[in-house]
Image 1: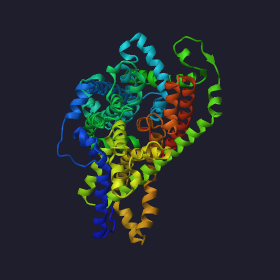
Image 2: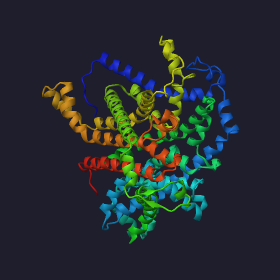
Image 3: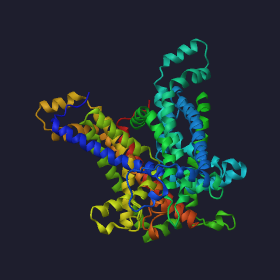
Image 4: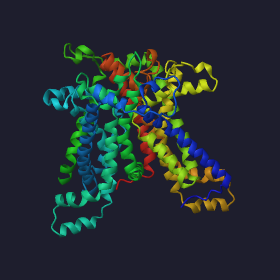
Amino acid sequence: MSIPLRVRRPGRLLAEICAVAVAAVVAFPLYWMVLSAFKPEGEIQSTDPRPWTMTPTLENFRRVFTLDGLGGYFLNSVIVAGVVVLVSMVLSFLAAVALTRFRFRGRTVLLVMLLIAQMVPVEALTIPLFFLMRQVGTVAPAFGLNHLGSLVLVHLAFSLPLAIWMLRGFVAGVPVELEEAATLDGAGRARFVWQVLFPLVAPGLVAASVLSFIHAWNDFLFAKTFIISATENQTLPVAILVFFTPEGNDWGAIMAGSTLMTIPVLVFFVIVQRRLVSGLAGAVKG
Amino acid sequence: MGALLYLAPAAVVLVAMMAYPLYQLVQISLYDYGQAQASGGAPLEFLGLGNYAELLGDGRFWTILAQTCVFAAVCVAGSLAVGIALAVLATRIRALPRLLLFLAALGAWATPAVAGSTVWLFLFDQDFGLVNEVLVGLGFGGAEGMSWTYDRYLAFGLVAAEVVWCSFPFVMVTTYAGIKAIPADVVEAAALDGASTWRTARSVLLPMLRPLLVIATIQSIIWDFKIFTQIYVMTNGGGVAGGNLVLNVYAYQEAFAGSNYGLGSAIGVVMTVLLLLITLAYLRAQRGNEEFA
């Protein structure tokens, strides 16, 4: 399958040395982040930083968790991202079913709108969404400003277009014969959708949910804008900025927090990387 | 009727959280909307295109617009150059070094924007950063205690480097997949016809990869044009005296720090329109390999 590029052996070796060197450079910031998270205070404050440590410590993690309650912020991030993933999977699955297994007028228009929705610069919507959330808060406080519900709502909306788009391909991939067989066996449409279709498109759900998770988990702008005074409801990316102070940055704590923030995403990425890439390729290609 | 039932939940969320705010954005941009109006203490004053006139007449806006475009262009060019070069490199090496390269890229890709920003800041920290230390060790005494975020251009460069670091993997993975999808006999045929490697790359591979590269480019433009987190975190809200503002951060600061929601919304509209134009280009690029089945 690979292209027979006529590369001489020394050439290939050189290319491989280059590749490993580049890999090391690219991975270095991550290495430095994790290393610094485990370094004792004295070594971080040293003006002679070393790329290793002989005395690893959990002191930075202990400090951010106990002193500044980063554990709570971590939990908030988990709640927001978790709820967004669960709800968006159900909603996008239903929408994908409607867009692939039903024939109705205006379907193409909806698909085009979905594509355009993916391009809306959501950051530009911060101002109207801020006012919207303030209004929502007067009716349902849990979904208004200063509450995690507001973050769930916006990230749900932002993750739906791509999730629907990705799932569409997976739902369309299930043969019509299967549906006919299920109908012959006496299963209604709803039963077919949930008991046959849903498990079959699970790989697509996994890929789409990872992207939803990452969007919600990484969000900085909306958490910063919506959670104003109720700091206990803040999420991890914003909470970490507390350690940047004019008197000097607590780099140990910042790196420990950043490590905590990165690990869940990294784990997800590694687990689903194949599906993610094929799902992405599918989304890009349509 | 059944379809409507399945569509309704997603449609409700999208209309309420995306379509309606988009309409609101335009509306707010037409009013003098400040702190008093936001709290309901003063009546709204309709300005028409007043906010836009103020914006377009302000030299600062044009500086920031130009800054945004140049910054995005540098980030896009960097991501594409690095991503494509590494994708080509990855096709020429054995499995193990390739795995290492992809693992490293995956790591950079997966790093949340805030975490990436903080670690790059730490690496380039004035006093405790590794980079200054290494530079001094190499004989560049001037790097001792040097600030990478004070100077406007250095700060932009630092943020751009971080952006390229976390966004080249997307280009690399897509391009690599594209190259692998080209049938080997096409290249063989070109070689049999006596084409050089360079000629094959330029006249055979590039045209086949073009649709993919167009999409990767436009995707990168859309991402890099609306960067917020990296600029905000790494330059502490837009740099010294706002020297590192880009449209997105400018709109945020005008609205939430300056309580000038009308003007902030006008900036948001300008940004949306610009991105919409890019989206149209994207749709045109997609049309070639798109079928609404």
